[in-house]
Image 1 (cartoon, rainbow, N blue to C red):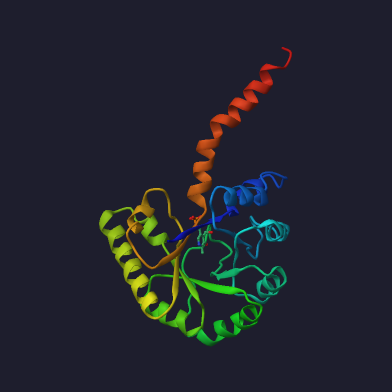
Image 2 (image 1 turned 90 degrees about the vertical axis):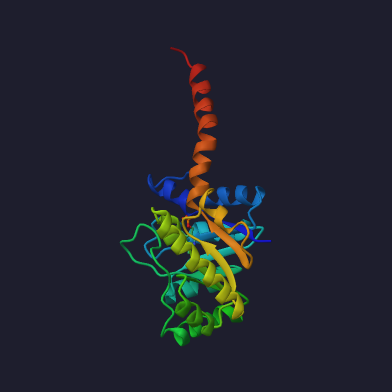
Length: 241
Ligand code: PXP
């Protein structure tokens, strides 16, 4: 049965918009676990635009499931991962100007470099995943790094506006899952998945985990807004006029 790992980056995005103290990603992570998430994901970006180092430290201390540290394959992040000791790292490409991770990691021609990068992490028992596009060549290259998992980038599928383009992207993902499983890789899916487009994978075998952030946090606002406004309105009604 596939499982759900919840990405709490957007909780930090909201906090950082005010550089304030709320909402706390660590609280969101705890609530996500209580609601059934089997893993928590945080992307510690080089520019620290959302998740901060102290968030990773706090979530590491309180995470009762599996912490997946999403990160660029840099020396700095390798050091942090070794220090934090998450259950998983997921290597992603990172561009300073991008709104979110735009494409998969390029593994072609970098097989040895990535294998060497993962070696000290693996020696510590940290498992790895490489976030890649649904491209057979990338899958072969990812496999050559010795990674246990790949995470197939579902963003192109999720973003496709036209049905034909969406089906084409879906077919690429389905082929990629088959190929990856055939060569012994475990497969996660992530990026842009929501309560509608995820249904396409309902009967697909071979998927270990779904990595989802934005749509869950968006739904949390809709579901929680009614109560949040009622609580404030009720409080204000008790004031003198
Ligand atoms: N997987 C990876 C590698 C990502 O970079 C992201 C976005 O941070 C996600 C999954 C989750 O994507 P979304 O927030 O669109 O659900």
